[in-house]
Length: 121
Length: 452
Image (cartoon, rainbow over all chains, first blue to last red; front, top):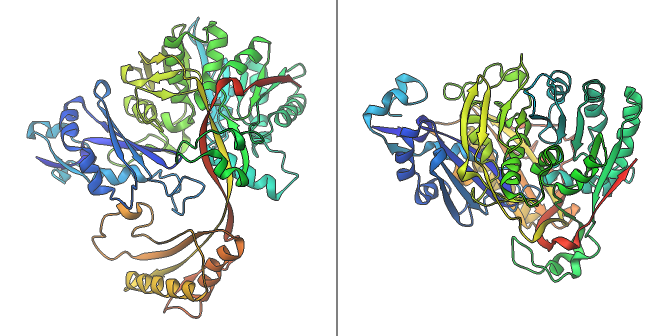
């Protein structure tokens, strides 16, 4: 079953200097292995291209909590005070990653978040 | 106190400078707190304070909401025996502490002992220190001629000393956020400054509390996916901390929001890079070993966070004058609004070229299509109903930055059909204090404690 990341994980971004981090958190432990397989640094690059994130993207895995923490260097236009972005802190950056899509087993369908009529989206 | 005997209850009073004040009052009034801690200094807060101080010599240099926050909580803290730790001192902790003492007197708290904790100001010495800038690798000396401030991030130790000396209220300048919450734990439980396991766990709990409502349902709601009860009525959290640092995160009854594994995990990783090496002045925290358990409704038990020895250095935040940002916007709506926005961008770029704009960086956004996610925006599935064209440029001089607003003014009668425009009342140029970081040896920073 093909689903958007939004159905299986929630995200939050934080800022330090010119670096943003985005935590991708599985709603259920059962989702985590599929998220870990699909939500790679390369997958993040399909959302955050070299203009959006000018430096490296690093992934940290916290298996015990079902969390992937991505660190995006050069993501904040030079940092909060220099940035020309309207969202200087990049507080809204973490919602972009929820567009990613991934495969999960059909058996997990009852655990998906969001509207029940929205399966597969 | 109504909480479990032997635990220490520490509540949040603010997660940032602009935070709401009522939740702090509820914590002070109904939270049965031992300590109430205020975190009001973001990286950018201090740069804003420095800008203000340059423009307004009468600016006292501390939290602009100090009076409001303290008036909201002091009567309750006095009545309930709640002590306060706060970084509202910003760039002048002593002045803030003196003002808090006046507010205590006003509230009838006659014998409140108020202490200011100030760290060494490194702005005079760091330019010749030979240190390197963390972000760029360049020598600090390369920014010395634009440097206006250099503040170290202090840890918990000086706050602990002030509490040990009997302070009811401790007002600090720049302190690492978790340290504000760790200090009461170290003071109360007598943790040593090299008890890395407890300091790691305690700092982790401090990190969960430091952003206020971000662990109680704030910065969290997503309708249909993460629904938050009564999100207009969010509380600030408290933690019931046990002697080994294990804690339960909770909130006062009768408030909205939620505390569950989702909110705690989101906040645990907020502003964290390597989760196994979250560096504070006090300890290196490892969140990867954390154990979380829903202990009751809106109550999460947090244990297992580990700690390793602190580093030999302290981070210093350096503010440098880096020119000015000019910014303004105008609007299109209805059929063709996106095409108009694109043509308006072409017009602006051509006129700014003719006007000889010299900018270090320039950005034109279409709010409604690509402004918030920028280059990470998805292609719009259909034409938006309306678009704001927003332009911003960072320039070396104010005169250059003012050209942005002038050319946006020009779009009123020299622009396109049906251009919506604001009357330019607001200040469209702001000064930029860019921030750089460096690491200094610990022994180059001293903290002084002054009771007022």
